[in-house]
Length: 133
Image 1 (cartoon, rainbow, N blue to C red):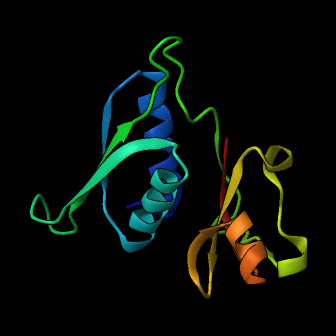
Image 2: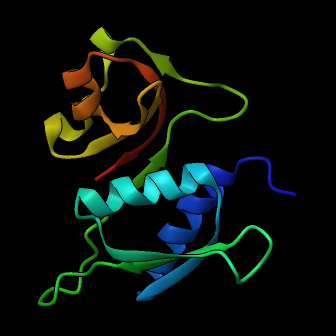
């Protein structure tokens, strides 16, 4: 039993980066799909694929992105902010800035799963899921 599927998702990606894997497979859910789309749009992962027929809930295959010269990952840190035991909600005027704007905060809002910059433009607050830089 997994009590925090988003933390499990982030941990699987972190472990794959540390082991220098090219592809990581993660059990799928709607929130994980949306987080994956945001990571792809912002250039932190190369590409992704949703496999619905592999199991009951399906899987997400993520191709991780590395620098071709230095072999460093595009993702330096993934940090879970809001946890099941302590949810972290922020209003639109208190949205976090990650590394003074160099990183992103992924939020779950009424407009969907978006970054902190998009939430500022839409003037919406929500639950801060994680920081990525």
